[in-house]
Length: 167
Ligand SMILES: C[S@@+](CC[C@H](N)C(=O)[O-])C[C@H]1O[C@@H](n2cnc3c(N)ncnc32)[C@H](O)[C@@H]1O
Image 1 (tube, helix red, strand yellow):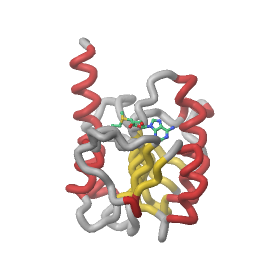
Image 2 (image 1 turned 90 degrees about the vertical axis):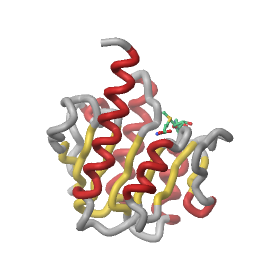
Image 3 (image 1 turned 135 degrees about the vertical axis):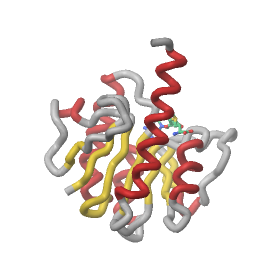
Image 4 (image 1 turned 45 degrees about the vertical axis):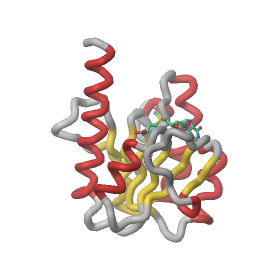
């Protein structure tokens, strides 16, 4: 498979998971969290899928080339290790979903960030809410941590993109 094929497959899986989330969180109230704004492609897709929910964005540095800039009130700018610590105080309520695309390329760089995310998510996501990620959270402990159930996604090959339901 070429790098181009791999990239396209990942983007298709990403969009499929975000689209599936419409049904998965239909009965879960709360805003949405987006980890990694980048150019804002997935942020914009989430905005269009969930026009009635606030979308809070966590981003180290907002690119001047971003397509859609989040309002300051909904932006957690800075390293996610730090901003996750303040999120529980700033968010008005628990979120229905978080989506993470932090561009974590190597395992060593990913482990501390994923560990930080899974440590904070139970305080940030409502029961029954979901976490969508391009990174397998089992890379931290060897399996999904307690309270995170990995969902089978029929339209996405196993291991390409991940959705977890929080207990
Ligand atoms: C692959 S890009 C996201 C692309 C985005 N989903 C899109 O569709 O345009 C990854 C983003 O995560 C951000 N990021 C990486 N590590 C971070 C960290 N530790 N804290 C906050 N943001 C981080 C990067 O600055 C970058 O903007």
